[in-house]
Image (tube, rainbow, N blue to C red; front, side):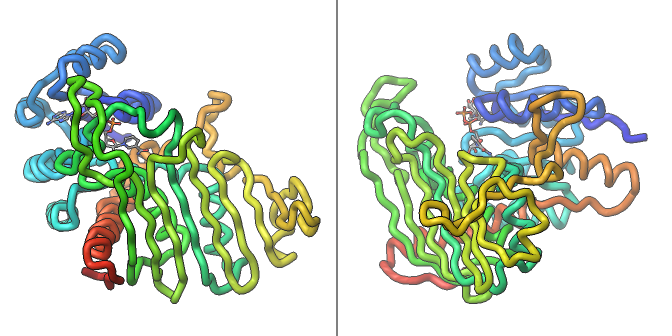
Length: 378
Ligand SMILES: NC(=O)c1ccc[n+]([C@@H]2O[C@H](COP(=O)([O-])OP(=O)(O)OC[C@H]3O[C@@H](n4cnc5c(N)ncnc54)[C@H](O)[C@@H]3O)[C@@H](O)[C@H]2O)c1
């Protein structure tokens, strides 16, 4: 039988409370032992809404005092590196939010140190659990599309009128590293490298800040925006695949818009996160017959066939209608499996995958400054 996994949370904001804590709560083997946050309001919410008792203002004190196995790093991006390095020093396993770090150098140091110390790592590229994304990965890996030649991906946030949003740490380069491209685009960068099963070989890019000053949501003061609102990349992936990718915050009124299109010699597919249980595809017959067709293609207004995501990709949680698994739950499964079997821990996306994304982000910054293509590895 597995022992208890004793977890500490660092950073008790939105993602910790709405994603990490509910994911851990699914496991009888996981005990949330303590949490740390510099904000009293966050600590109060962790106490009142989640019943946590051992709360710290300084995460280092928590790491020193509590007996932990694993930490969740849920702070603003500037603290990922120091928290992760402190955890590695203490031999703790780590599930870290994306993007992995502020810079490529930080991400490299974190990855190498974790690997050298035998630390189990996960990075929360949470959209790897979207059912249609899993089906897209399966179809591409099956070879059904033939040799791929093109991949485009967008991830944009755009609820209320863009210019009127209050400023947050996401608009400050020292806290976030990157803005819309790093925050949103990092998800689809990871998704494309996972789907295509290759890295990026070269990047050309344009980063843009559209609203240079905002009203700080905390202080009410005017603040300078120092991260990009949006970024567009031209990419050359491995295997000579051409790509286009966009990450940004500025699709006013569009909501969370995550779409991707992949074309190969024998077929193509179109993914839209707003329709998470289906894909539009053009597939050779022998591949298409594996899937349940929702609507035949070939018509003028629907050239592509719409297929249903098979149940194996839904990640349904038995006994809880509608509830779906998360990438963090997959990480805990891998953790328990390694404990139970004594076999090496294997999980993706870990720090290696986080580092690959960070390297492309770094290349993007260099490409923007140089107005030219940048080759990878850097
Ligand atoms: N995977 C996803 O889909 C997803 C979604 C949202 C956010 N995120 C990531 O999660 C992280 C947090 O984002 P959020 O939306 O929860 O932000 P947030 O602002 O709601 O929460 C961040 C928390 O970190 C705390 N913090 C800052 N410095 C700290 C320190 N030194 N020690 C302890 N706590 C500290 C803040 O006080 C705050 O409570 C970011 O890296 C973000 O990119 C990922």
